[in-house]
Length: 475
Ligand code: BES
Ligand code: MN
Ligand code: ZN
Image 1 (cartoon, rainbow, N blue to C red):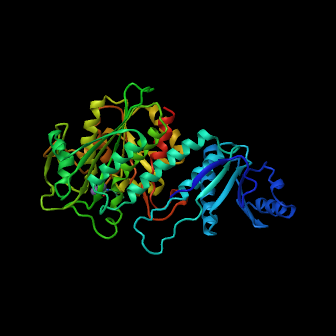
Image 2: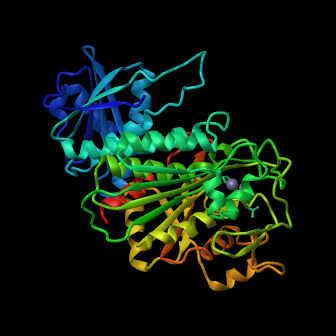
Image 3: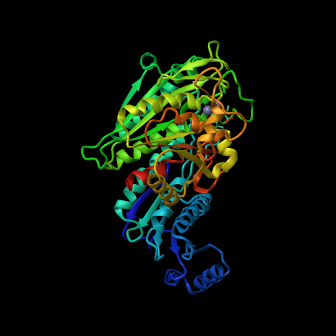
């Protein structure tokens, strides 16, 4: 359960107060003379936080640096929220209030966002030593956050947390068919339509890539179509979001070495989670934009009938792919989804995928790599959204020469490009199937973190949801 936020007229009486300040804030009136002097000394000493307890009341002052760039101040506020959250929760506090004395009125919302995201826990499989958070209520002063801003935050953070939970669910629960059920449940709750294509329909559509990857599995694949189409829309043609839904990646016959590289491969549907979390949020907020989500889903296993290195796979768009590594499965299933996307005559298509270790090696967990054919204006808007929400993205070069690396002697293209530029050659592979403006986001780094990183948490992060919601909101 995440922290519940309530707007409140008067927050001065609460037992635990959080005050957001900048250099110019007059916080002294909230404190005793001695405390105010001690707080000033702490802030002069460049400490970002000051805490005091007196008369059964505690006050936490957070000092934010208003000389920093606006987007960095927002991130400072989110990260401060994490520190405050951990501190108060560690003291078993149940409830606190928040008031911002800072001149920058956006900082309150950023702090609340950070607090909600910091309060997430995934305890479903704990039966012993369950340690649920205690700090589950935050009363926010009405001068600190508007009703509209709170509504937005509630929807977007819920989308992120939903994505995290989907990523954190292991294959033992989240098979392709179960993922489809979760999507249907989410569509009902948020207000978007869902169509699930079963294996028969996938065969009828000749989605050869998805079927090839699924051959080694005991469990059927699904192809999921999510559509949010409000009565009034600003866009004539839809934005299509494609998400990689590999519910578990063993590598197939090109088996991954265990333990290190396979342990976290339940995260290989994080791209799907990004799409689901985004659709959830924009439908909840009733944003006036037509958005379609496409999610091909399967596990990648080395079962008896698994596709083999050397196979040639006929894809939905008629191309033949020479498979030289069954662990390059993400691009196989995404390719068919990208082919399917063309039927919407989309304005633009974005795909999200935990596609390559190379993207992770290049940028770490800090950023997603992206590349593709959409115009500079679209990229610029995404870069702006990325900055607003502090989900880093970095564009990789996409020169046509890289396409040479996936030329096949036997078929039209091969599914691996060799040891160099692995994130880019994966993108070049997908480009063959994208016949419209398109960008590919490789989230293999930031989708799943082994070490806790502030409010982004540990394990599934739900990365991409906040950026896409911001992008669609400003579309
Ligand atoms: N799911 C993996 C990529 C991945 C790696 C995701 C690390 C999250 C963390 C993907 O299917 C994969 O196996 N990619 C291969 C491609 C290679 C065989 C061309 C890789 O990156 O090694
Ligand atoms: Mn793989
Ligand atoms: Zn994979």
